Image (cartoon, rainbow, N blue to C red; front, side, top):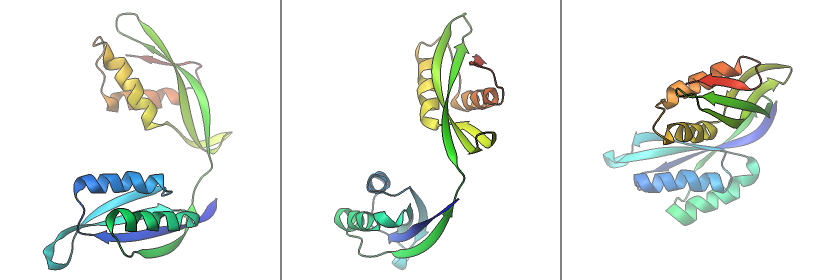
Length: 169
């Protein structure tokens, strides 16, 4: 699948780390899909950043206005693109986590399915869910599992067609 898009290349040498964090969040709020920062050395050997802003064509004015109003950025380079992507669907799966002292906790898991639902190219779990799950599992101090190990366990369980998915911690 394809759709038209834009990449804006925005150079700045005057924003602090906090302002750059605010810029990323603000740009996404006004319509950017994604914002990447690349550290640079600019004129007069100043440290700077290149912002690479991925957005739909229809959101260029909102993004441009945000850059001017918030940061005084007076211009940018625009690259017209064709965004190539796969079909994405979400499905609900039940997840049952069994702890070391016999406890069981049940969760609703939202799974991202990439490609054809009948023959997916990949399936994975959104990071936001994993962060919440990680906090809940480690909250009572009876369990200690790293985020990396938890992600591997959940993604491994997804390969099985069990219902519910079962994790033994």
